[in-house]
Image (cartoon, rainbow, N blue to C red; front, side, top):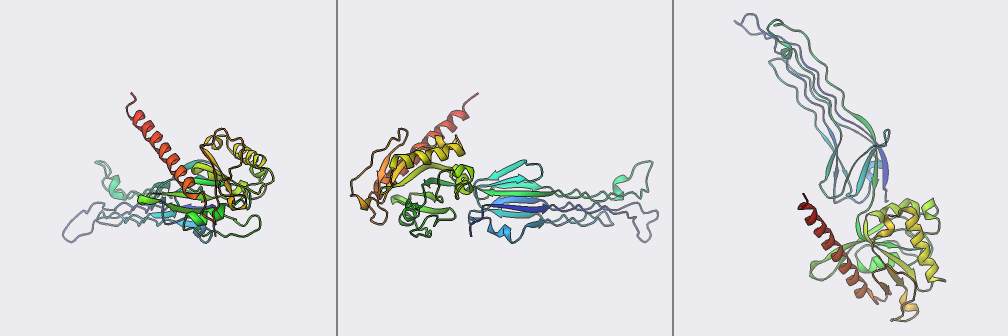
Amino acid sequence: MFVDRVIVNIEAGTGGSGNSSFRREKYVAMGGPDGGDGGRGGDVYVRADGNLATLLDYTYRDSWKAERGDHGEGSNKTGKSGQDIIMPVPPGTIIRDVVTSERLGEVMEDGDTILVAKGGRGGKGNAFFVTATHQAPREWQPGEEGQTRQLELELKLIADVGLVGQPNAGKSTLLSVISAARPKIAAYPFTTLSPNLGVVPLSDHRTFVVADIPGIIEGAHEGKGLGLQFLRHIERTRILAFVIPIDAMDWQHEFDQLRAEIEAYSPALATKPYCVVFSKLDLLGEHYVPEIVATDAFGKFSISAPGRMGLDVLLDAWWRQLLSMRATTAKADDDARFLP
């Protein structure tokens, strides 16, 4: 099951209390205060784990509590600090505080870690309060409570290419042919109920990731169909591929509708590089390319995924576009590095 949004309750550990103690040792008169400090409470962290692809585990466990610190002891012994808790999530997860709506951060790559709740400080023992005029203090401090929060974890898939199209446009079939992904494929609308990711292998050990997004219908940005639920997963893709079946009633209308839904959901998303892919080429002929107006597209391609027609040209175009974008990003980073 694909789960991309969950609410969890977290609680950092409470700090241990300080100790009020006086030295008791044979043949030592007037033993002074020796109460140790309490240990620090454990923190709560969120860490990206590249082996995960869904937030499903958090539907079974929605409460996380770090270990509290031990109390201080005599002989100036500090209590043991509580053990931290690390919550593993898929890369691409955004963390928000539900109560304040504050965005705490996001983990994009495997190993990225964010502190989401800080453990309480341990209390001071009575040895801390010794002064020249107060040499036998009995004061001690209780440990501070750890932070308590209700978090929203929201997953946005990270992919190089996002396949966008209406139900039964052939997106899942295309993904199953060019990668090892095995999405459900059937001859009825909304077969794909959750996004699927596939790694596309090319020669010379080159690879890139393609995401199959559930079908988008008119009004998706308003919550119709499944589009609104999964449109956010397209935000993290580098390029978009609008998949239109060649047997569609009106190619131009279908393309315009898809573009309109993307722009209505996010104007920034509509500025991403895109291409147009006509699927089911085997229905009309191997070299048939329908004419539609797509002025900003970096290419128009006709394919048949089951017949493996036109796939090499399409994959090569995707790879070249990704390389061009990476080169542009690297140049921008270099230029920024030398700015005063």
